[in-house]
Amino acid sequence: MKYKRSDFPQDFLFGIATSAYQIEGHAQGGAGGTHWDTFAATPGNVVNAENGDLACDHYNRFEQDLDLIKDAGFDCYRFSTSWARVLPEGRGPINQEGLDFYDRLTDALLERGIRPCATLYHWELPSPLADLGGWRNRDIAGWFADFTEIIMGRIGDRMFSVATINEPWCVSWLSHFEGHHAPGLRDVRATARAMHHVLLAHGHAVQAMRGLGMSNLGAVFNLEWAEPADDSPGAQEAAALYDGIYNRFFLGGVFNKAYPDNVLEGLAPYLPDGWQDDFDAIGVPVDWCGLNYYTRKLIAPADTPWPSVQEIPGPLPKTQMGWEIDPDALSRFLIRAAREYTGDLPIYVTENGMASPERRQDNDRIDYLDQHLNAVQVALKQGVPVKGYFVWSLLDNYEWALGYEKRFGLVDVDFETMTRTPKASYFALQEALAAG
Ligand code: FCB
Image (cartoon, rainbow, N blue to C red; front, top):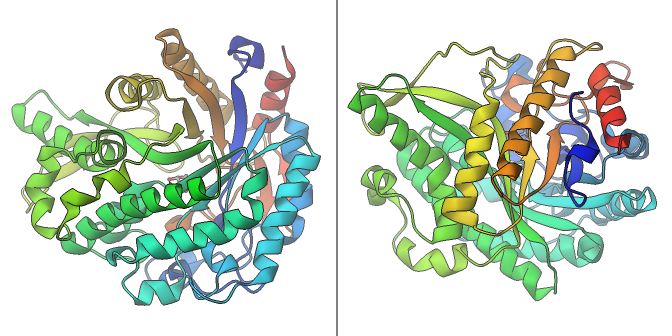
């Protein structure tokens, strides 16, 4: 790799990220059913109707996986805690085996000198809560705060950092407007409610953790740069709206206690009554901001009801996901986040990486990581307080609606035998992290 550890500030942290449902093997250890299990069981939603029942069997193999993290030289591990593994019904009875698992995982990280960075929710909502309306139901803020107290009551004393909800846009818009992720809805009212409640739940969880005396708490947003497809006013307006829905709504709610006007034009009629009164809870101070970044989109107007925007195929090189590779947009986002939303707060790139079909000599991934580390360097030079960078992901895993075909891992997984084989990118990062 072009970059090495010594090119970054001394306190800069390098980490690697995964999530519970994508690797653990959800059918094991007494976890309850989730909306991802039933979404996957419904024909047409997921490639080959694949689910997370076994995934990478991390539940039984986590020691081996943590050895891989340690041997690569990462400082931090970003993992998520499965709500349904801890509370199979979403509320009420605790699955002690689930709590014990996260306790063992935490200690196993500390034994290896790796900082535990938890994310409370990475998408597998317990089915009984989905039955009650899931993210559409305002009560989810309280249910989530209760789950937060239970899991962090057990492991919170040993976390380096905790994030609340991974990628509010995916939880709400992708899952309730586009229908691509569980619960697979396509309904603007459900979407507006989910968008607001996901931020409210974030705020309540932060308050719950403050109550436990915890610090180093953050929020994790996924950002996608919206580039007008041409220089017409229509394309500019469409791109600004896409940017509003995707990026500014969530950052604006949490850091500026306001939603963008262009988004409210379409969504206000569907937001829950009294939404304007929730910003003190939503905007409760956090200690850092996490940004997940993968790609940009070219946006043009569309002849549809609101939001009347469409994505146009772009000319840049693409990953196995079909996502254009645009590292410059990562620099622009880091700079913009600091200037318009987060000020002096530490920013972490909490996910970045690419899917590649190459299972051993993944030079394309090495190149992608180098280009995006360069983007971080650009932001650092502008004075943006970027404090760390996490690669997505350790292992090839369950890539949601795309099943097991799209491979994001630094480590190859043979899903028949569960054999782990580090790829060239793993060794390249190992060398880069050891240098300096
Ligand atoms: C992010 C998700 C993560 C993974 C990557 C590729 O949006 O947080 O679970 O699917 O994309």
